[in-house]
Length: 325
Image 1 (cartoon, helix red, strand yellow):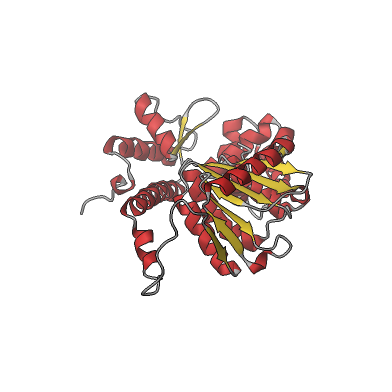
Image 2 (cartoon, one colour):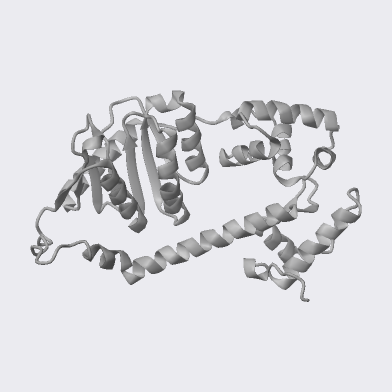
């Protein structure tokens, strides 16, 4: 029976052979030096794939198998998702399906040179429009949040949309009201997005709520005081341009998202966080850093407290999401 292979996850034969060899060396003798004859290009590719890391000495260390396969799956899914989204846009399937909702004998479409404003009623319908607009965004996404608060429910709804935009390389600019700085959930989510490339600023001046995609379509509330009533969707060039100008003016007056606690991290703490993410055991992490296991565990306990993490692996994931290493 043929041995299972990583090829279906995008790992070539030579890369897999090198990764397996690194695993064997580590399993045979935890203190043994890893092979130093892995070709440089293969080593670089293994690191890029996320299944091998380099220690502070430059030595190669294999990521534990379960975590390595998880990273390969996530990488493959991200690529597949992007390909499917591009294919769906090119095929026009969304427009085709949308037409099924149009009643028979519907009036002809509004002329292209006439103002186009559509009233969207109810939060469910508004969220559907947001999802559709962002799905087709290709260059820029501009958003504001006048309350400055993102609830856990809102974060759960927004996360796949925001990450999809950033994964596609769309420039994301987000303006948040000042209360964001005092809300842990909001601040954590904003820093998560910032670590993935989003541009975020904090405004101490009143903000007008809006979402603008590709400077082509804009969504504003029907009633700014009660967003549950719905929104207005406009594709009229003059109105969209005016809203973009307003956004740029508010953006210029806002401040950058304050630096994270990483400014307070020592170099040893950064290295420990990387070790938590890559090492199987405290002993191997401490050995790589050249410190005692007791000192290593003392730093780990402190970092877990700062991150409000329930375990070591969660602490490593939270730190990575916040861009701490």
